[in-house]
Length: 200
Image 1 (tube, rainbow, N blue to C red):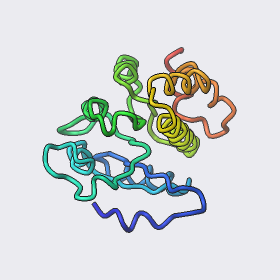
Image 2 (cartoon, rainbow, N blue to C red; image 1 turned 120 degrees about the horizontal axis):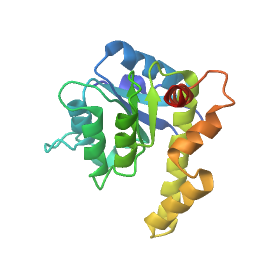
Image 3 (tube, rainbow, N blue to C red; image 1 turned 90 degrees about the vertical axis):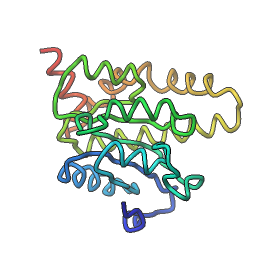
Image 4 (cartoon, rainbow, N blue to C red; image 1 turned 30 degrees about the vertical axis):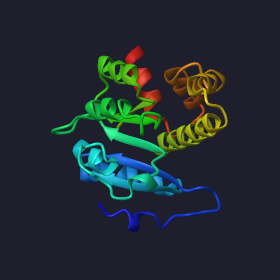
C-alpha cells in the first residue's frame, strides 16, 4: 500500500483523504482517477481485510502512525471475496475511532434490499457502478459536511445533537438528498439511475 506517491495533489484548501476499497483493479483505478481529478488524496486497497489493516482495526498494530492517520471518507465495493463491503461497513461503525467517518458503498447490482440493509447499518450513500464524476462530486460534499460536523463536535461536547442538527439542516435523509441534489447534474449520477430503475 504505497501512500506517499498518491498524496502529490495539494492546494491551499485542506487535503481530503479518501480510502477506496475494491477487489477489481480496473474499478480501483477508475475511482482513484475520479477522486484525484476532484483534488482528493486517495489510498486504494484491494480487500476489506487490507482496509482493516490500514485503519488498524485488524487486531494487530496495523499502521504504525495510526495516531496521525486521517481519513475523511471510505468508499468500498459491496461484493468482495472474504470480507464484503457490508461487513467492512459494520466493523467501521463499531469502531470508536472511525465510526463517524462517512462510508459509501458501491455495487454494479441494483438490489433494493441490499441497498436498504447498508443504509440501515449506517452507510452514507449507495452508488451504482460505473461511478461517474457527478458521483464523486457528491462524495466530496459528504467529506466537507463530515468535516463541518467534526468541527462542531470539538466546539460542543454533545456529538449526537451536533450530528443530528447537521443532518436535519442539510438534508432530511441521505436518500432524499441524493434524489434532490442529483436531478440537476448532466452526468446522470448513479443514485438517480438507481432510483429510476427501482421506480420502474
